[in-house]
Length: 287
Image 1 (cartoon, rainbow, N blue to C red):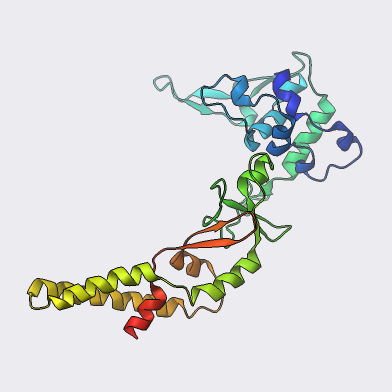
Image 2 (tube, one colour):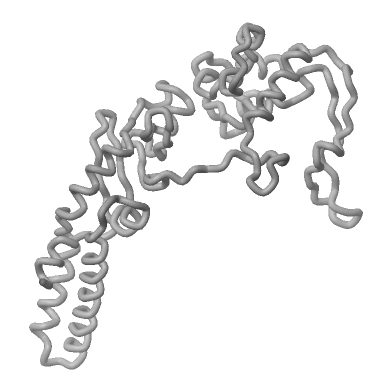
């Protein structure tokens, strides 16, 4: 237990000096734990698949564990029924807590202060302000489609810089991956310029070749029917593209329609991967 806590100690000086407005200031990030070295929980547990990276949830579980303040907590789980031995978690009110059963690793004042800060930093449920809930996940414009070129992890939105940064670097520091970042506004402007004049050659070449071949063989009923079907499909594509290219600004609908993923390099250059290729040439072909 002591070994595990060595790398996630609460900074008591910062607490006593009154710098307690945010839990983040008291809770060491996985990046700082990695920088300090030592064993991660998976190493201490002797798991087969050990990771050198700390997980944010592991750090928080340690900070919220009353065992470190000298208390023993039992009855966290119970069986569902006499016949069903599956286990379920109990509510905190049903826990059995025995105070001061062993020597504390951190003082009770520090532990209680941390709990208050964690609680004050939780988002409140809109339906019931008295009930704490997990932080609401803001779905930002490029969430789910923007990735790091080096490690492949998704980029996370940072409000303070109004842009996206490599998730692994943000969580585990520069040892894990370099900081790939791009501002949301700059990326939106780039997409506005690029989408309307993108070259979708692969799609056009493939579909146009199929149409030419079918039209050459239009003496056969099957080929003629297939050509008609393909023509209708391209008409549908044209309608979709014409509608989509009429956008005034980049939004989720435009991104989902055109962009499969966005990859950001270390120098903040951007590579776009489209959902399907050939839109601009299709418009020329079918105009």
